[in-house]
Length: 81
Image (cartoon, rainbow, N blue to C red; front, side, top):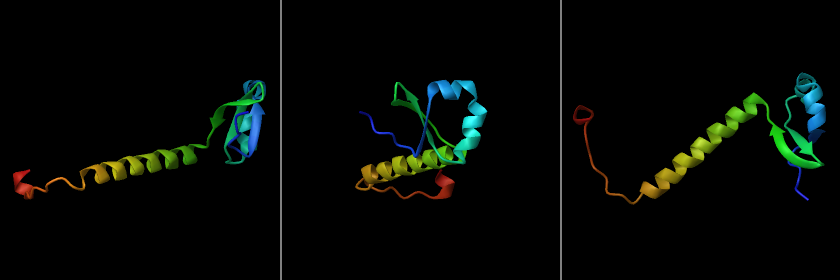
């Protein structure tokens, strides 16, 4: 069985009936959307989504820094750019 990675869950049928009510009742928490009692999707608050995207970008940049840390450095001035 797939784990449900949210403290709240609803059926896809409930979501179809009244999505606004589901969002309001979530009170800023993520909600697992279940199809046949298995997680099919997650409703994530917009603020949480923005934070996740920012964190992902930070991780990608950290990975890039690690990949380039042993490269030879080239000094340039702003005028040369």
